[in-house]
Image 1 (cartoon, rainbow, N blue to C red):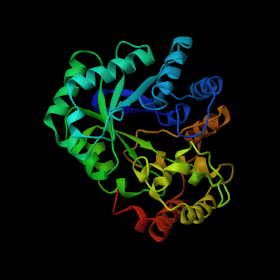
Image 2 (cartoon, helix red, strand yellow; image 1 turned 180 degrees about the vertical axis):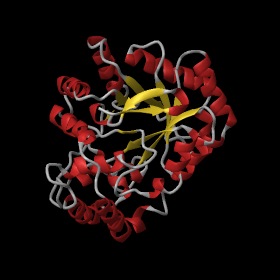
Image 3 (cartoon, helix red, strand yellow; image 1 turned 90 degrees about the horizontal axis):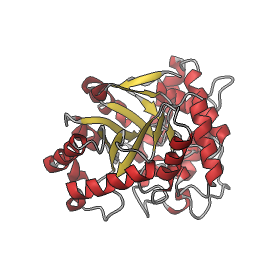
Length: 327
């Protein structure tokens, strides 16, 4: 699989990575043996980048990856985790002492001395402008608790503020065919600065897979049930902030753009891969088959210009008014 470089830290990652939120919580139940099978299928398919967080299942996702790393010491992986969501979301909690405690917990969960990449996990907006916060992150690097740091953001404005910080290695941002705003300024700024772009929610919580209908029922412990209107965390994390009913209609149009031999989900991933400035896209997977199918998107031929134009027209017509002003 193609590997792309996060410029500021000269680290390679696979262009299709694996998001592991669903292995911890909030996507329905995933058994431990199934989770490990997903990790294995991803690696066997060429994935070299896992993304997790300390709050995914209160550490379960990290612990599963840690077990996998112990069982597969030959696997050449860069594992990114996130911190900051285990406390009330107030800027005052983003301190060096808390950072040390949070990263020590993640180091234990993952079974490593030094974390490869730690991202602030969608913190309150003022955190991105705090010199003390970034000084503390630099201290973690000096103490070898972490090798590098980045941020996971909700808005393009937060991304641009973080890119301006010289120590920021990566920005994780919601980016997909239903969320085009990062194309305008974030991706060009990141490319110029050598900051990696990690595209999350690439399938708009599954909408872009074309598998769902108005009759689809998600489990009670699935965020697609309990967070449709931002009841538990930012609404943009669920279906990219798109209204479910109108999203289904747009997804049906998108599905029709899939080239022969590719699924709508693979087409959505391929669209992201070929956008200038993207380093890695991190779809989740609940089964080995999904993990393999996602990885196969990296081998698809680039989408033709006519498809790219059609995606833009679909966004402008059906999605833009819902999401562009907020994120």
